[in-house]
Length: 90
Image (cartoon, rainbow, N blue to C red; front, side, top):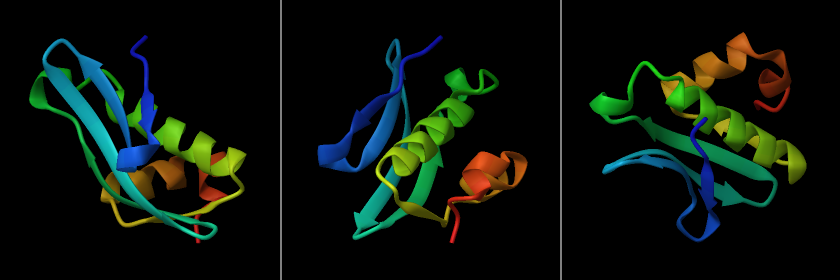
């Protein structure tokens, strides 16, 4: 299973496989994580990479007692499919 790296200095979660890197980008202010964008390169698609990034972001938000504002359509859909993630959405 690919490893998700949280690059908090760059406000992003990453999965790198070979030369390709998938990312989830966010901003944080006070008790809110706003997720702006999720990108998975073509060569990594179909492997649940976006789902792993989303889970890591929601797990991090939960651990830090943050609410999540999903501006990314993938993340909004993820929150609807997984109630534990949806519970964090504002």
